[in-house]
Length: 123
Image 1 (tube, rainbow, N blue to C red):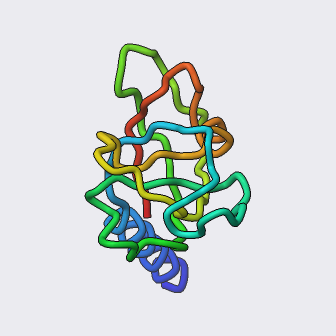
Image 2: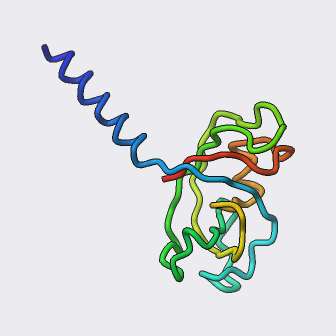
């Protein structure tokens, strides 16, 4: 009986984790300073900018997102590497057609740069 309870708890945890993920589109960028959240302070390389839908008048500044590649947005076959990346939101990209614009370094952890744009989930 104890094994079934542990299995059930594990399944519930997986379902909750999946339910909290949000689907979106990711691209990458290469100029990180200045940023809308931190001005001229360098925030490292594991960073991202968000489009209007997530910006919320700076409400996401400094928030940590975990982003996972889910598949191609264009004809590039199999862009995903199979990993997730954790990024700090540091900037706003007004009018960006993507949900999240990852630093080039963060993008390469989860996908091939050749893809340029990918489907992602983030939490």
